[in-house]
Image (cartoon, rainbow, N blue to C red; front, side, top):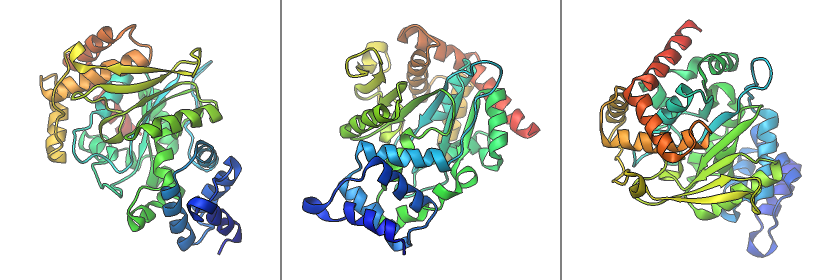
Length: 352
């Protein structure tokens, strides 16, 4: 048993009246002992459920991210001079189960437009056991799971897209996945994963959330860690995919604003994208729908992909306004450039 961890567990697990928040340094120490499994399984499970009930603070989240930065994989800037800012798309590791995700299509659009993109995640994961990103990519003919971190680095530099795969590249974090199933709830690490960046250079963090207080938590965490380039979306199932059946509630970083961010309320009907969300009936059907989009075929999923791709092209500075972003996203799909990027990535992995 770890006596040091036991003291931290007592602080977060003592209940409403006597429990205390951890400092940033204490949270970093707790995360380190969990990732290295210096704490016992009983201690780790107790900490996760106690912290889930208590809810993490921004200082605790910042401390845990400090440890993820210390122990986790980091893709490095490349090339001569200043490397371009990399867009890191953060989505829940336990996947999607109700609505069709378009995040991989967004990544292809961005990289086809010259914006380097990093994604990260693992396999089928508790508590939702939804369709994980890695499975979608594999279904599209791109298997990131076999690559070493050095090969992902090479792929990112040559194609503008990389994927950090938890079991292969961050086994310490993957080692605590079974606890998610055993406690039946997402632990605090499931929150920090959304804004974790496995890239050492200038990163633009995109993350989704479900509950409005999470946005405040993220913004406060960014402030503590010096993060000034982010977009936070009340997205579909907590992802960074913008909804079409309701107003998209978005917080975008704006360092010169008094609060450091700006609130955007985007109404899909104002841009011709209002509609029902595309349901996720099966992974095989989703892959067929995605391939149809990449082939330039009109569909509801195509509208969802343009709605998202155009927004992020604007946010990444490729397009001066939203209408231009939507037009460019549509062209990238209908003219086959997103499909061409997919083939480029497939060929690059084959050559590696």
